[in-house]
Image (cartoon, rainbow, N blue to C red; front, side, top):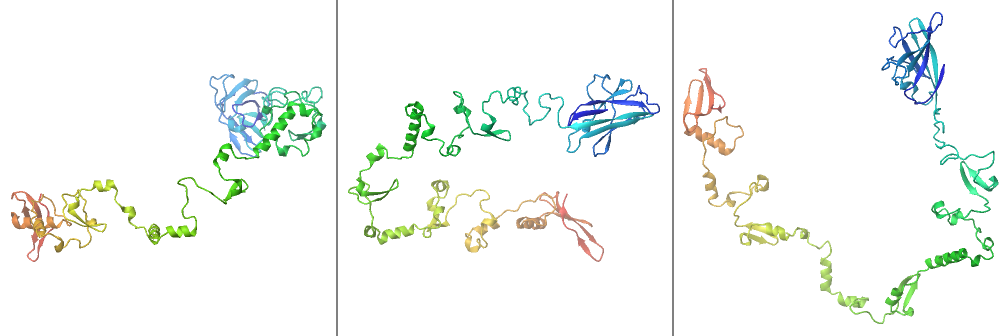
Length: 439
């Protein structure tokens, strides 16, 4: 048995014939899960693909398609729902063979031809190059009646040229119906100089009385308008604005190229320095120096760094508390307060603070820094100088207890261990370990 399906068709079913392997009589009662059932398909130039048989939903023959669905029709004929992959569209694949076996039986092979057309499409058979409309309908192809030429055209075939499926040129038209050609029936720019043959429009192409017709009047109007469009005369306003007689200026094209004589100029428009002598009289050495100073190379490089009004208003140092030398604040004499972290190590130059830079009582203030009772804990290897001195002071001042194995330095209360260290003595070497938390 043979079938024809469109390439890429889906949800398709075929009929299989299963007969006895001994006498060829039709086999009945085969189920999708009968022992030994093994159905397969092979696409052209491809490997054999097994089909996974399945039961239909109900199962009845009117059930919808289900891949691998299998059900007896009767008298050795069975329904098989093909997997969609068996009919997939691919270049060069134009047929599929379905076959298989059942124990003690033979499944007669079925050949399926895969085609590009759609046999169920009664309009154009799935051929997208054809219009999807019946002939003579809107959008459909044009047909002839009883072998005659196109029903609606009056041009004999000798009067037009066809290139492919396009009328490329009409060589002769006897007449055009009224309103046969309208603005909306012509593409934009379809009539231009290039599309009109040289000499196509001359005296001979017009009727004897064309001059008295409205059409001729329109053509003459168009010609006159073309001439006006090419002419660019001055407007009344432009003429009124000029006061020079034509003898006093030179016109090149539509441009006044030079004014040869001006009797007077309007108030406040007189020109100064129109010749070398006048310029020399005005261009003094002093003025020249001003101009030189405006050159980019002579402008102060720091002019862009002048504080704005907002920047000045944001400062809190009164003028009496700083000294300005040139454009630099040379010294600040009084500062009432600084924001937190405004002066850091990175902001102070090396050797910026030495004995000469400190006030007489600055050192006194530094050494007057009070010690504190340190918190219980192990001393850090990177402790600050002040903390390190604090530990030495507490070890010298506070209560200390010593046993055969432990030294403990107490906090100021005399009972809480600040730090402690284990000790040992083997009669040869006395050892003391690193101080740790006194807890």
